[in-house]
Image 1 (cartoon, helix red, strand yellow):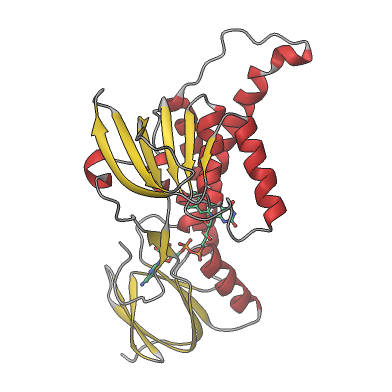
Image 2 (cartoon, rainbow, N blue to C red):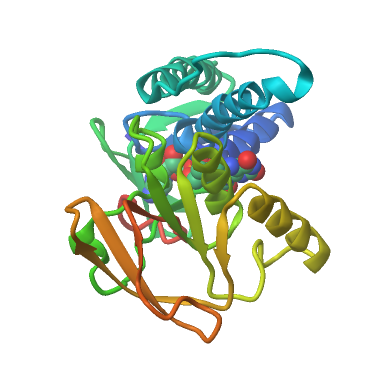
Length: 284
Ligand SMILES: Cc1cc2nc3c(=O)[nH]c(=O)nc-3n(C[C@H](O)[C@H](O)[C@H](O)COP(=O)(O)OP(=O)(O)OC[C@H]3O[C@@H](n4cnc5c(N)ncnc54)[C@H](O)[C@@H]3O)c2cc1C
């Protein structure tokens, strides 16, 4: 049997891929989307925008309750239940992911399950339960990104959280160091500081949110500092190590403005991603 022929094939069933294949079908093209992961939905729904916002919403409510007295209200004995925050996130994400699954299975285009790999510029081999080949006039590579763990001496041995594990972790650490100050790191800094963790941000560049205008970055920094977040800019994390008590780690830095002696924290968090745009193998 000859390989199926399409006008347009999208590789990757995340938000980008779904938007692409939907538009192609809407325009009357014969289209297909290829998705390799067991759980469909992509980063935004499963481990990105949506779960992080459910956590942030819990943090925001807690912050408001903590300030009740300022507004002439009393909210006594309030406390944080990490397991319930994560349980709420799971419920909402299952719901969103179910909705996306239905959209992908709507029949307006073909959904092909498996990992795509180019054979030539018009042929894609799909490795999955039912291996197949698809031919298309045009392809959209929407394969997203994978976590990138930075190579800092001692980090692996000490242990750390990344954006996937924060979203699954019901433990609210006593203190946490954020490595980097991009939007995701700042979201998590907000989340943990609102729930009562002592948060320190270590950022190599001279401002938080490095792609933003300086005045926006300054407003974000001021707001975090006003909340008690410690911010070290122009600072490179040079090593991390476990030191007593057993759950603590300390970091040393290379920067004139940085602390001269190692600082301690119970958890380090690292958030960095790298593109999957070479779809020759499944993402890590
Ligand atoms: C914690 C966090 C919070 C975020 N918050 C926001 C936010 O508030 N606002 C915002 O705009 N963005 C946010 N983002 C970023 C956003 O999630 C991503 O930009 C977006 O999800 C990328 O979508 P995508 O479709 O390009 O890739 P993905 O969603 O990663 O989809 C790629 C898909 O391709 C599949 N795939 C990969 N290789 C192959 C292959 N060879 N064959 C078949 N399938 C393959 C993968 O399984 C995956 O399902 C956040 C990210 C994180 C981590």
